Length: 338
Image (tube, rainbow, N blue to C red; front, side, top):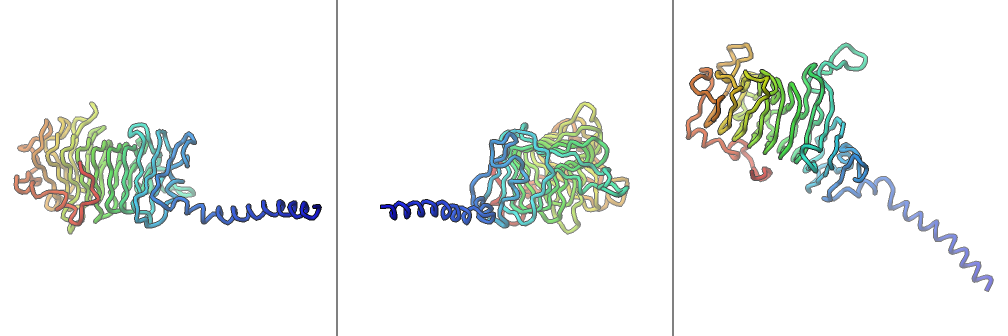
């Protein structure tokens, strides 16, 4: 009897150590990382009620080149973060709980001095969110650069292809949205975009559907840098161009590069849009190459007979040929229905 009791005692001492050994093998760092290797939603909340308190931490656990759709759901709150979605991440959706109250913000601007130098950081390092990956979607969220007006300050910087933005706000001043890579395709649906100067700029092909474009001061809405061999640049369809009371003389665009392509069609243009519509960036040579067009616009700012001679009003037939399928060429299955 004593022997049996001793055996039972020995076994009871061994079992916990074996048990913890198994647990250790299951919950080592590699296995922990794999726990997010699935299509499940990740929850982020500043108040600690989610799996993560920062959006960056949620992005960090996503697996490279995912073949499934992964949602990062961000609860209401202000997230002061400077984010990159890297090139090896695909098929991620960042979805806010409430567009106006789920805010990712940062405050870099171009004239902030780089550490140990007298040089400013420059426009292209100022982003709040930089998207390098493909097939990325943002929904119901605000991306903001709230830097003081001391230089260019990008809120959204894109380099990936097949990027979708649905019911988002993009807040800033100069250079709010930089569509930074030629040949990439972007789709904005039901978004609000505000800024001061050139606040939508870059070389990508981007379609803006039913968006509000808000000018804060007298300046320029767009500054496309479309390459000469790229057939389309910026297309605004059924958008509303609005402005603050301070903005009464705003250009639709000026060419950052000679072959800039920008089209406003079926848009409501407020009275703040200048009658001439477009500006040549103080270079008459740009008038020979810039591709600036309009079609079917309405409102006080849609003054067809006063536009600069080097812009065009499309014919009805030409306008009918401007569709998502023709603009984006390849499959449009990645684009949500309006």
